[in-house]
Amino acid sequence: MKVLHAAAEVFPLVKTGGLADVVGALPEALSVAGADTRLILPGMPAILRGLEKPKIVCEIGAAFGAARVTLRLGRLAHNGLMAYVVDAPYLFNRAGNPYLMPDGGEWPDNLQRFALLSWAAAHLAAGELDPAWTPDVLHAHDWHVALACAYLANHPSTQTATVYTVHNLAYQGLFPAGDFHMLGLPAKFMVPGGLEFHGQFSFMKAGLKHAHRVTTVSPNYAREIATDEFGCGLNGLIRSRGAEVTGILNGVDRVIWNPETDPLIAATYRAQDLSGKALCKAALQREMGLRVDPHAPLLAVVSRLTSQKGLDLLLAALPTLLHDQRAHPAQLVVQGSGDVQLEAAFKDAAAAYSGRVAVNLAYDEALAHRVIAGADAMLVPSRFEPCGLTQLYALRYGTVPIVRNVGGLADTVVDASHHAVQADTATGFLFDHATAPALAHAMANAIHAYHQPDHWQRLMRRGMAQNFSWAVAAEQYLALYQDALSRPHPGATG
Image 1 (spheres, one colour):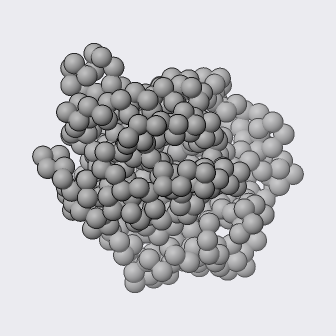
Image 2: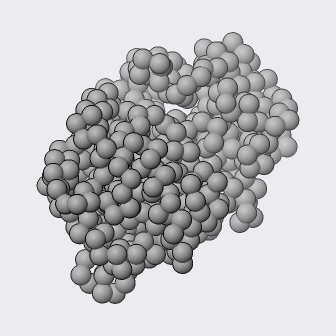
Image 3: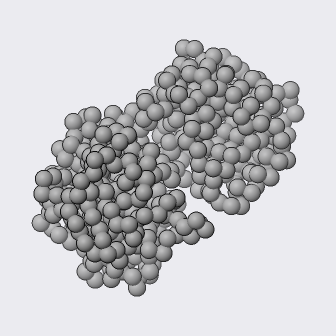
């Protein structure tokens, strides 16, 4: 089976979040499982630098405001997979965040940038751009390339099946209705049953409406987005697709994220010998300016600092956590960037609780490894969470997750209830309500368990034994692709 993955970012070349990790790992896992897998990516500087021996497949010419668009094909240096790159310097030759200007605002031409990427993916999937290779399946990731599904739906003779994955329904790619003509789609698509969305139009709707199959990155999130609470105004459309919307849990790259071999951490370790984790904890405490105390429970956050991630709840719960006056009081490390108000609030907390709270307001992949390896517990108090990768990495490293009972967090963490503890199935701590008291209660439960070393080590080892492998996800996707190829297209409009 020939599968083309279309996405705006890929680890380790361009990354803003979990999307890049998925696009960096899933195609490779599919290749190992026997699929002929390629990617199509935007020609951002880091992606072009990561392409080995590129050759020109075709000169597309002028399109979407760019005077010169070239489709190149080469191998990604980090994994050897073949990748097409849409080289349009006018639209993509920009350093930094792929979506945002240095001042934090969206690039004003994001419509043209990602419409071009979607258009190129669709025409490649239709067999127009590379006569030597036409995919059986086009797998589009998130809103940036969702429009590819509409372009293919407008060309019903195309045999390629389409699969669209929602990584985060909250980011929908909304643009003014007056700019719809720039897409090159017929006006019949700009209707409420098509791409129109409350006076604007939505790239996301193109994938939800026109893909043969829609997936999310966890089974629970697939159920949640069909509800009013989590559906972001698209729950009616999602419910209308019925069983054509499914959830497949993300995996973990077990080579990159492996405490037994990780070169980025202070000491390697394994479930049978956790002594190296204690060395990682001491090294992290020293690095972050915390009191070096092996008996102090060290909690951590590795996240974008946004309201979605529930980090305002953590700020509100901090006094409860930090007023602990025991001999070995809890500590907190926060790594991430995002909302300027949250950044400022965490900086204030670090100043107020020097030696107990440390903050690093930057994206740093190597530091993320050191934090996850060195912490005792990982906080993911999200209001909603499509899958979440941080808690999966934490489980792999014996860092006990404290998470809200939503989305992929609920799919991957087993609460340390009395029954689960007795059955030796518990791997972490869950709380139900998005409130500071609920989070504070979960943290208190975790800290209480931490001071029972035998119980805590059982939680650590049970988490490390979990198998969230991309090989499992790849087999599920291959079955989904076969299903998509065997079913009729959902239709172009209506």
